[in-house]
Length: 169
Image 1: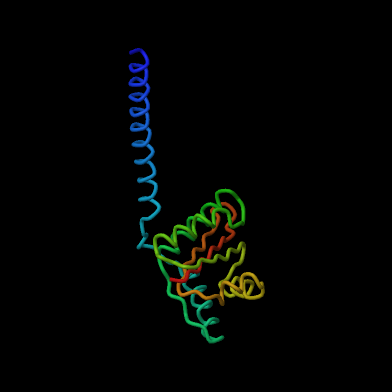
Image 2: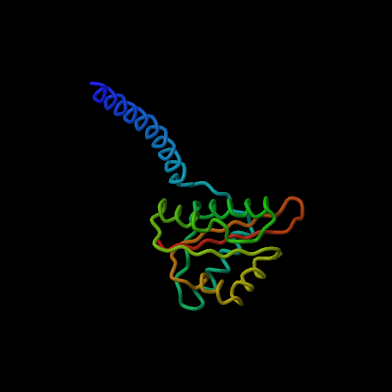
């Protein structure tokens, strides 16, 4: 009898614990997934961003490749990375996997690449630097169909941060 009551008490405790934990975890995971999968449709491009995108497309077309279509969501993800670099005073690809996975999930991309740059003053200068770097040029001429870009100045130093993300959709 004591054994049966003990088993029932343990089973009830396990069931109660599992339900309350899984419910909280499930809601948090569900909210995170919903937030991460939201497609951003609005993005305001500045003149430098548009000029840089035009130069990239002009180069691609000049070597027989397709022009890339801009996608606001990709530019928004690029801007998030610029903000991160400015806030942390770094120039790196930290969290590229997260940006890439988001673009794959939200936009259905099959391939994603990223170029970053720092402290260039003109679109011509940054595009020339990317084309003169074999690894950056690989993205510029890569098998992509879409792209996005964000170029932001550090409000303290005035130096520009660039994030250019490419995707095959």
